[in-house]
Length: 207
Image (tube, rainbow, N blue to C red; front, side):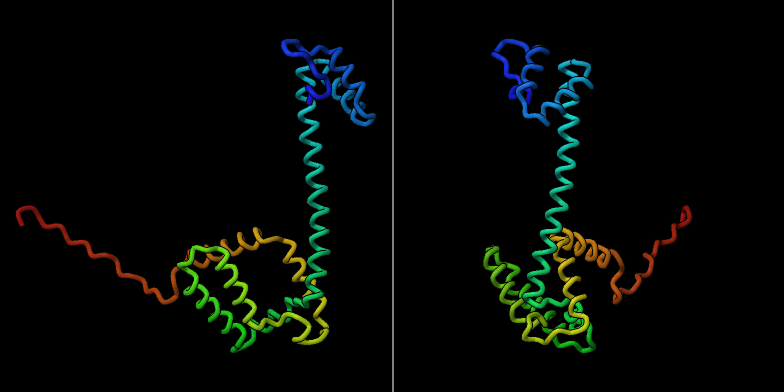
């Protein structure tokens, strides 16, 4: 950055006067910032580099926070738009899956087993993606306006779905990994405790 603000010829060192002259050519707000940093550095070029680095890092942190807030708001708006157009009601889906003897839950379980058996040995990612998309489309999930009208809990279901979508795939993938690890850390229900291994009694000397 200093080479841009105050360029020097090869073999020559940058002087304080060169730096000040370069700062005077900067735009107004940036010129004021560089002057303040130079004053805080005690007009020492090496210390000015340190102050410049601190200022740049803190500015990038603020920019990153602003960008994250803007993208989250944009994601929420887009998610709500898609959820409403497709009528993806999480409350209705949860009720369909949690019902006693739910045929939808059984069909999803059977489809998952069938998908794993057919695609476990396949190395083509595009083929697996196409098969997964087709399998999801054949599950007859309660998604879309053809499955029912506008209910009292529809808005709540839309909001839940949109908020879940804004969390992103890495969040849900990590949560699923944690859930699987917790389930796998305990003893299986059908596993019976094993009896302790018998240790032979040591014989007496001369026995």
